[in-house]
Length: 219
Image (cartoon, rainbow, N blue to C red; front, top):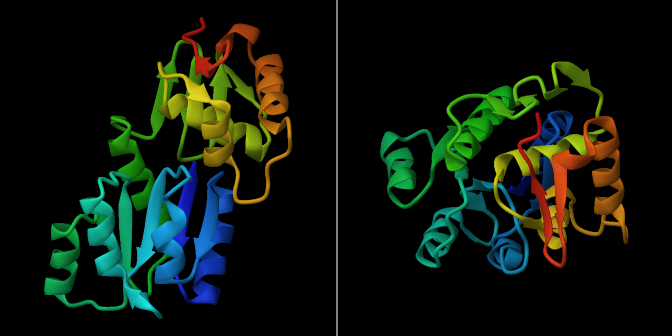
């Protein structure tokens, strides 16, 4: 899971990035309206966390632009304004949820999980697909009833496959959803997929030649 955080408060942003990383969530951070405008052109994200009070523009206007341009990613708005009409307006222009500052990062994580879960049609924080079971709340993966020890990157990768079950994911998509900017090695995805197959089952992740990879319903 890869999230775009747009927040100009450096201390707050650092706290959010660190807290989400502990939950296996990759976060890319931007601090301005101008940077955020171009961020979605060539990148894939699972969700966006957007501060309304940016130093060089109105986050609400950015939200409007994205929705007009067909961006359907789940978006949580952060605002220091606790006025009811402001919060209502955010939902009306396309926000999926909002949080008033100051907030508890644990609530942000819970709300983030909820909107991404809805985006992928999941009813709760449990995912089952054949012999694979994932608990998103405690970041645990079981295969054929056994707990599987995964690295943070391996967990992020299996999470992307789970949320796209039945759909082929290209190498480029997996890189963008699993890594931040300037973090990807030349064969990193292949190495992690090799490890996942070794820890669970070779047939769990099928290579679709010339296209990418797909999660299979292994028993």
